[in-house]
Figure 1 (tube, one colour):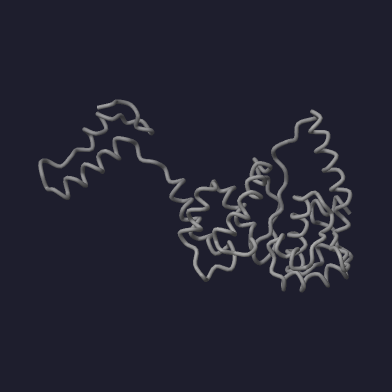
Figure 2 (cartoon, rainbow, N blue to C red):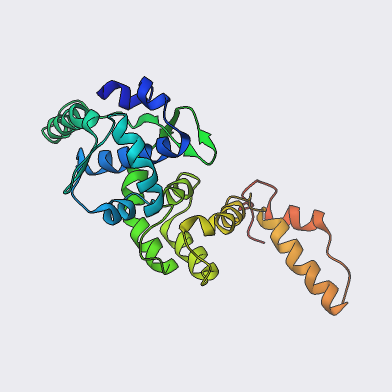
Length: 245
């Protein structure tokens, strides 16, 4: 069962409805991140920790319980198929702390998207991303004025795309409003900010030329600047650092 959970290809999982599959996937990711195979919170606490709406959790638990994929009682919610996987992960961490074989920094990452499931994809720097994600998610919820980090997986997507804590804070604080019910609200603004951040920078000569040309347009004084003069003066390399003028 543990291997089946690792690849989410067990027949019982494949037979689930999309909503139950998404809930199970979120529960498994959270438990693996915490190194546990069960939750001890009430239903509301589990939903908050996993970035789920309480209605989503309640609607899926009956189907998951009937399939034998989760065990629900009055004090806990468990995913039995994770027991062996958690034990192996704990042993691996302990061996690593003792100087064992270094862990590879590439591992399979399953993702769930709106409307269905996506295939496995290798994520590089995954451990570092996870650490940053766990740190930033509660801060992001606080900046957005949310009681719990609903749709917290979107923050991980931002980090993978190159966002850092400062950019995430700036985008959330600049765009938050009373209409915010989840962190997904900021996704469009974050994509615009990342596009701007990752836009290729102009070489130095072109920046100087643009500045002086705008000044010429505003004042109308003298002759218009010539691009060739600025290229010769400041250099024509991609970073524009050759030449001091």
